[in-house]
Length: 213
Image (cartoon, rainbow, N blue to C red; front, side, top):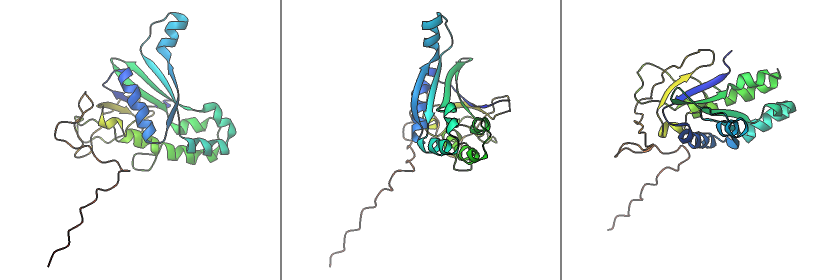
């Protein structure tokens, strides 16, 4: 059973971590813990491994609702997000919310999981982070798959693929019409405009001056 949701980024792990944290923060998920697995294994066991960071993320409202329904769900919190190097690229992985709530087998938890991980067409916050992380150079005809890390990352990094739970393979994702090409520097091409945030206030039009008689 594939219980992870995964995307692949063409940037180093240490560069991806702060952007992943920013992407989650934009959707209301704070980063409570950060564990450097590579540094810990080197210090404790003298082993050299690939870079791997475990981020403990939490959305306070989702956590409140889950804990009120099933206090023991706290054993599975916070929600871990793994950022690690694999095959020269960086994987960003998180557990499928539906898999997470299947452990206590409480039906009351499922609405929370569904809202957290709904398909890109719905309002699920975790999918909104992932659903918009798309590669402007990806072949046409592919649609984004459900996942975790998309919204803010699309302004900075090219996304190589997104894997749907149970598919066993990375699948290409496509940019929506008019998506900007992403530079390795994280900056848009000169002359392009960054889209306004959905929270930005609409620009005010200058009021017309009264005509004089």
